[in-house]
Length: 136
Image 1 (cartoon, rainbow, N blue to C red):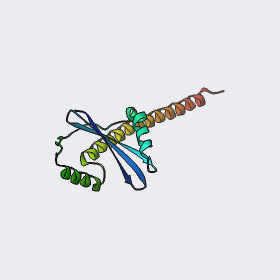
Image 2: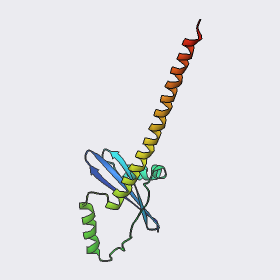
Image 3: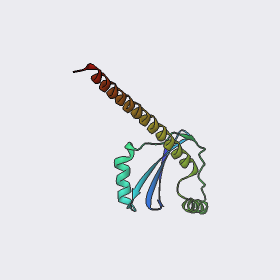
Image 4: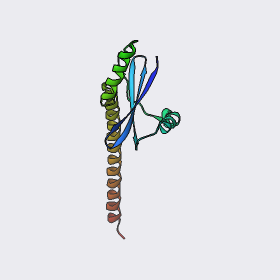
């Protein structure tokens, strides 16, 4: 059962959208910053054009709750969900995992760049020394 939900909320100073995707009992999430308040048409265009390009977080196990059939209960549930901060705790965990993965990836890349730059400087210095010893 694949289910995708989009929650758009105001996280001062920007409007933010959280995509939550549930596949085979596993939840993954993606956070998108819209900036100014998006209109319904803009959100629809974003979903149609950019959904395939989104980078979702690693999956987190989640239990799927069955929906209540009572309309009043459904209305209460909807009210409770809108009173919350916007993103569910599982979605926040998934986004945190994504941030950590990106952070480690960034660290590895910056470390490699730093080492290559040190090696380049060392080779340059070594070449200068060789040039001095050659004589005229």
